[in-house]
Image (cartoon, rainbow, N blue to C red; front, side, top):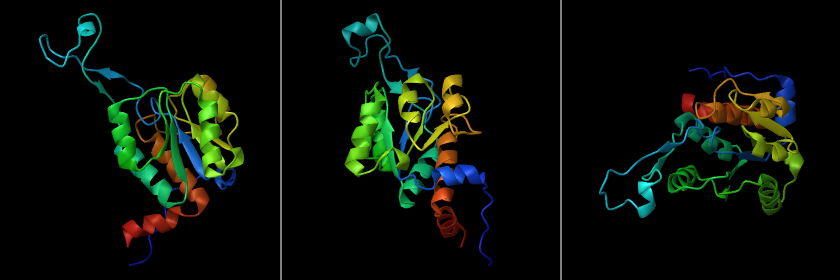
Length: 200
């Protein structure tokens, strides 16, 4: 059987900008998820409800993740690029998902994302020219304006799309992360070899 020829193509200028990326930061809500916040509610009398639940929404907070994105994050690591997450929120379900994906560089409950990104870069012995970021809203702008490659989902806020070097075709939570991971893997020169493992 002849080798599989990759169908994916990106503009040369994008690949050139991305070729030295060694770490990529991701926001969560609106990037790794669709941005929706799903709040559950315990039924009346449920022992898990707390006293304040009678005044505010109780129960579990649910997040929807995309399996294409998850596999992309795993492949990214195999391509020698470190995924990192900086998010303004924290939840057990998010921690579980990131653990399953092998993401160890994570900052939870962080609204000021610039210091968090600097801390991760220092820990990895890297600098801004080796970093990328994918975000969707204003809190992501300080980091996006410093990294070598900034990316935004197509449904990101207009100000974020304006500073992004690449805007994905896919929406946040619906394959946008995978699209960015694919681009970075192609730029690293590892995409074809990784794909070949699945097509031999």
